Image (cartoon, rainbow, N blue to C red; front, side, top):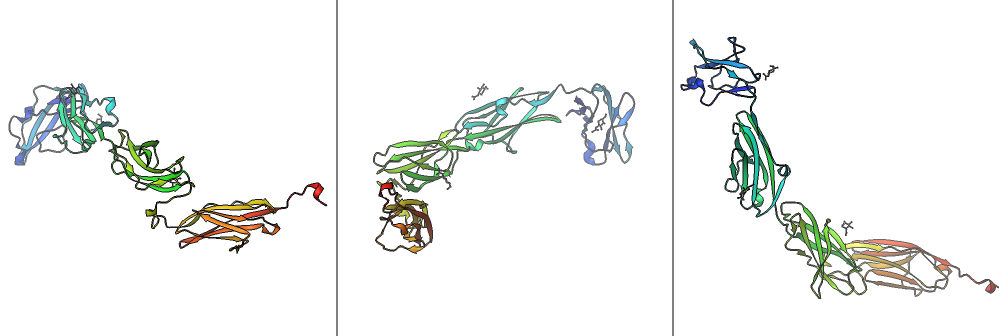
Length: 406
Ligand SMILES: *[C@@H]1O[C@H](CO)[C@@H](O)[C@H](O)[C@H]1NC(C)=O
Ligand SMILES: *[C@@H]1O[C@H](CO)[C@@H](O)[C@H](O)[C@H]1NC(C)=O
Ligand SMILES: *[C@@H]1O[C@H](CO)[C@@H](O)[C@H](O)[C@H]1NC(C)=O
């Protein structure tokens, strides 16, 4: 028998086990008695029990206990057999405890290929039994080597792979006492490039890009993206955005007349993806700075009802001074444009000049007179729908100098 904390545990080679345990025959039962303080025998197990092992729990430290056992069968009780010496109930000298180093209390991050050599000290007396699990199951000892000494356990991985990531748990145990500590390994590497990148719009000196997250984040979250542009003539790449968090961007200040390509890299805590994803489309910045759409996208991708991207603004002019109303419209197929004055279609009245080029529409009102004021509207219409913008035009009387009035 040995004493552990407030429990008494039988030793593996207990004094009561000098012969084979008879419980397999089914007819023997054991009664444990305990003496406290002396010669006052009391049963500790309320029920008879068959096992030849019993833990007497919840004892008071410092007590000296005599212990004896009686075997019972249908024929009656055997004479008791007692321990030669009383047992002193002692606190465990040293309960088992994993002393997880501070840097392992949060997840431990290493890169693919790194050597992992972690020493985890523990305490406990007598020497605890050390065991490890990974994600609640057994360790793959081909990958992970564990070596334990009296004082520590070393987890060693020659060259880490992503699959070595997981929750490892180290346990130290002495009989009923156990301490466990989790150890989270995360094996990371560079991410892959974004899954796709495309140019969604080109207007003026700007290009709108959109991309999707990489298929492979390198086993750790993506921290940002790097966006580069290249003028097709030189082919040299320049970084325009770094550590950029969103999945779309507008690249501005492009140079008129150039044709650009764009590519995007992904980034995680290991660094920037080795390759980039290049947008298939190119962006040509037209001389006029007007929207350009690569022909291969006209058929499907850009079919959309008309939409005014710039509305008409109210204006005022003076009798006799020509003025222009301006708006811009997009839509595919190319919308048909009609101008109206006070809801009446203007048609080809020579007083007005209607121009619509690359989505920029203007109505010139030549030398307006008193009756040219009113509400002007521009209607854009294609197979997918129609839309209208309007504005007010005010015609002011010219200011006649005092002297000229009569
Ligand atoms: C342990 O002993 C205390 C008092 O000695 C008692 O109150 C308690 O119920 C006991 N616990 C068990 C699990 O027997
Ligand atoms: C692991 O680290 C221990 C010290 O913490 C060192 O003694 C041992 O040599 C290392 N093992 C390997 C294989 O690097
Ligand atoms: C990104 O896309 C959203 C939704 O389409 C849009 O509102 C936003 O303006 C875009 N951002 C940039 C920088 O282009």
